[in-house]
Length: 244
Image 1 (cartoon, rainbow, N blue to C red):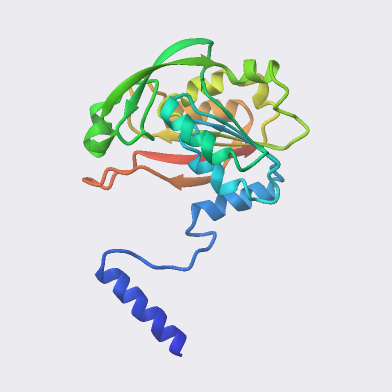
Image 2 (tube, rainbow, N blue to C red):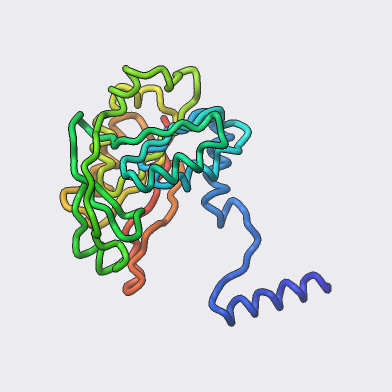
């Protein structure tokens, strides 16, 4: 009875100060959902495309199933943080270039909030919904394809069961197009997709989903993401696919 009273008091205080308090479980915690997917699909290798400073990889590097993570981040400042963060984990490899549909050199647009940085230009839809995402700099970066990386590196071992995570701010289609051969060996794909145009020339959900269906994948989870706080409209979500 005392425990229930304390929980009720904490909940009321949380509401008063503008936040919610709840017990973490697989229904309300995206991190736990992905953790369960990793275990259920026996994932042992994560390919982390668009790693930024390593926020995603660090959440799952300690999962007992995970033997290796390969993170790709092209922006110098973000990569330097990623490199320091990964240094304590021998199974966490980091690469300082972008992935796309072809090899070359490209200009990446760096946003003030870092995580919105993209090889594509921000649209007004994005900057209105997130004013702190405005472009503040650009940087020239090397681009290759995931298939080329796989063919020229011994770091991707196909004896692993693989989760491919793609968070490239409007460049998801290009990453997928450059990974057609490797996709045949990827068990789970987690990628951020948009419902409205946030970056010039990006593919929206319908096109991405059709591609995934044609490659033999089905949706197993949806994690809501970026919303427009002015309207409540959901602009992006992370879709998790597995092979049918």
